[in-house]
Image (cartoon, rainbow, N blue to C red):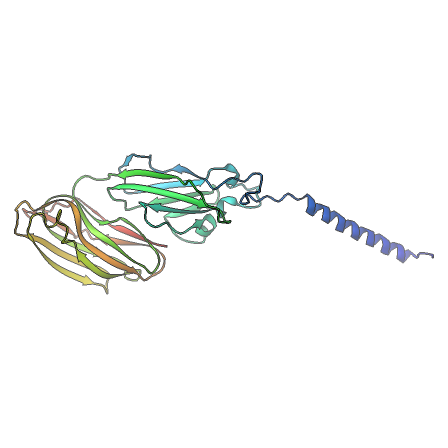
Length: 312
């Protein structure tokens, strides 16, 4: 049968189309799929956090702030512009301080969509940087843990123990200085005195954002026999609890008993809050108008520190 010119053109087009299909099939076979989160991958590494910066183990720092910087220990998981996948931003981390609740898991990708301020992710370096402020003069233990999007978690995560000793003298502060809580839950802080001598009276002025949290209740630490009642005196107090404006004021004095007053470290009042606002951070402040007086009516307060509440 005689083929026309049109038939020849059709055959050429069909042959070319089949060649393209065959070539594409070959390409699919030859592509090497890399997934460093898959244990079956030749370059897979277990989740392992490398800490680049934090306080020295067992040492004392003279600051109320501490910075912690970390990333994956394997360079294959670090940021690389030539990689099709940015593994660094997809790894999840969480941390805790003094065995409190773990923070929520956050990947670098998630942090870029939030505005936490104190916990950031650098897309160029792939580093996580966490800054904790309002640390008080106590011992601390910090831990950070990682996991992959496949839910494979780090088994042996890094921890660090350190001590804060930032100031000498009498301190009035919110304790703990760092509070971590879930959204909508109840939590508490204490107004605390440190290293006081011959304490006989206090004017405490605390303020907070009542759109973020509400003061549910308060309790004087009158059962603290090693502190407030060590003089065997009577506690006289006047309280102004203004929840509408987010302000709590306490005037407390120790009457009678030993003239040496109260000395040492202890809590004055416990404030019980409920989180009612958005997630994030908010400060519980002690006003500079607050005063602490000794048996001679001298003002003895040297340092005042507020506290911060972090809601996940």
